Figure (tube, rainbow, N blue to C red):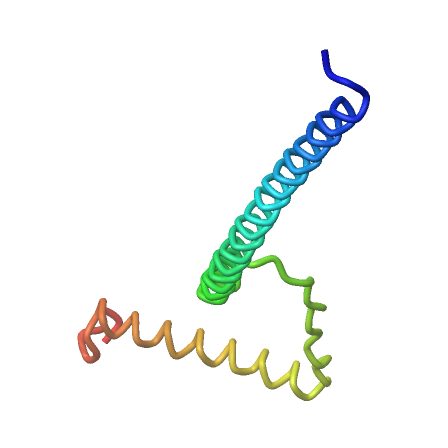
Amino acid sequence: MLNHSQQGVTMAKKRKKAKSAKRAKTAKTAKKTRTAKKTKTRAAAKRGAASKARKGAAKRKAKSKTASARKTAKKAKRRSKPKTLGQRVFSAFEVVSDTIRGTGQLRDRLEPPATSETE
């Protein structure tokens, strides 16, 4: 059997071994977490760059869309200037004179001049 002094030495050795094993284990886990963090940040950076590229492409695509395809705020309807009395009379006169001219042209096409039945 071991005496007390020898027993203390072996216990100290065991504790020392246990401590070094624990230190090694924590170092290993720390290294794993560091590499995991690096990988995570790299992946996040890649995702960020990819999303920026997608956003840029989406912006370009949105710009190329026609105005009808894009949702825009409703424009206020433009009101035309109210016609004055003179403008109304003038437009009515034009309509009548155009009708008379059109009727005359149609008559000439159907029946050439100087072939009237009444003469």
